[in-house]
Length: 116
Ligand SMILES: [Cu+2]
Image 1 (cartoon, rainbow, N blue to C red):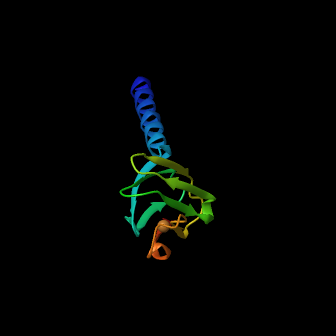
Image 2 (cartoon, rainbow, N blue to C red):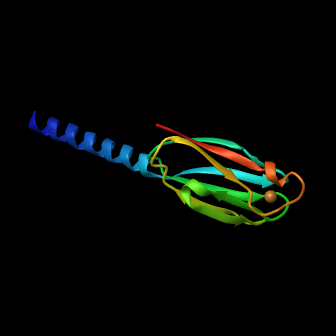
Image 3 (tube, rainbow, N blue to C red):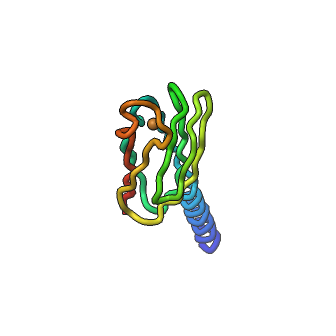
């Protein structure tokens, strides 16, 4: 009886640890840039879920700026640019291109939606 309980406890704690580990693993979100859009331009994640944005460009250098997270980077063709984020509050956060890339640049933006 004792032994069975112990095994169950161990299995329970192992499952709990695995679940915690899974929750703490960053989720990768891939976003590609080209004149004059991000794809996807709406991404959704959960509060408290670590994220890695994997940014690529299909044509030229673009910028990626997300002021609410203090994020600013170039996106260079042929490279993956990885940005780690921890969304700690729910809300809708804008990102946009901040490297002038031609007519239409001003409309090159998107939204990260963090759900509670
Ligand atoms: Cu641009």
